[in-house]
Image 1 (cartoon, rainbow, N blue to C red):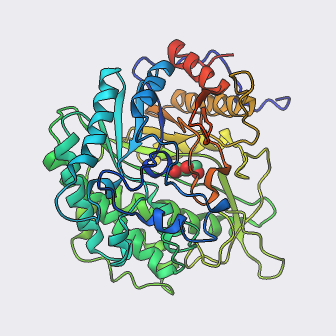
Image 2: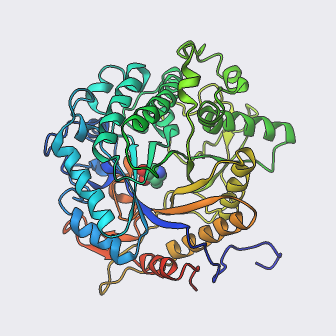
Length: 479
Ligand code: IFM
């Protein structure tokens, strides 16, 4: 850059020996085998089979067929030199209806996966919930039903008993923001409910599930050096330049309360922020928070998982000009921002990924610094970062994806810069190992560093995978 500010395209930066380089996926996005070995339906099976919900009517029925290809996918991970692999466990494989005795066949699949990782020297990082709630629990109210949090704890206990002697790190929930606000608020994700009150109720029950789930895991896990975490998609929020200072700070505060502090408050500090309760008073009285809940939720964790893709820029809507809603999660009839619908999400400066998300490694660095300042004792792990771009094609056995290489280079540089500034960052899981089912976008958005031909299930390393392999083996950001 000519103005002296960094462009985050450094190379040669070296990561410490104990920094863990890995990659991440999630069950519904890759596994397929939707009806095999006793797996019950999840809310994403129902939602994806509902006409009009997913681009092209795509479903996760087959996805990457990972369930049947786990051995060769493990070999692929070894070929890349991955030091860790973050995967999620499908609750309806373990308990078809979300309750009762665990399904041995479902657990055996994850047992084979974990053993395969350990045999290859890859650290298993398991997420208990990456959005595939058993449909039978949704029929009883899903995350708006307090009982779901208790069912989650039972599920966590069973999984801990089966895999807790081998999994290195556990994550309770992946991005509960999405589960609550996209699933029950805007309705662009399963189960497709559009109610602000339902979304905030889900926020609390997800938080409760996190706390109860951690306690249940701790009672059944036996591996001595096990680490526990939750993964949040902490929003990096900026005020819009064209708004006055008050408008900017009010909008930033409101979105920070809903998106970030609604989770970090109870999980890490043992309280919901008062301003969140005030901002949402016209939506709910929060009576679903019962005495003692905050103590149950506020359990110690060893690492906070952070998922980062881009920033949001906000101001208070003046009520006159047409309002933009560039919050990056599509248009819907419901609101993902209960009580703060008067906040405007403005279009941000590019460049953009194929999701329309702005590329902002400086925001990544700042987010990590901010989190470290808020929670100085808490180590961080990047549990997802990556990008979808159009045009990934296999030509002569190669996939040239220079934009993804550039994106990763700039974000690894940002992470390194944050570490130089004192952030205790333990590792980085690139999203995603494989192209996969990108929720409401179906198979139209490719996030993988490995290309998947959905007709043949052929896997091909993209240039970004080769670049990442070099980073892992040298521990330095390659040219
Ligand atoms: O694909 C998703 C993932 O499931 C959760 N975090 C964001 C990714 C990209 O949208």
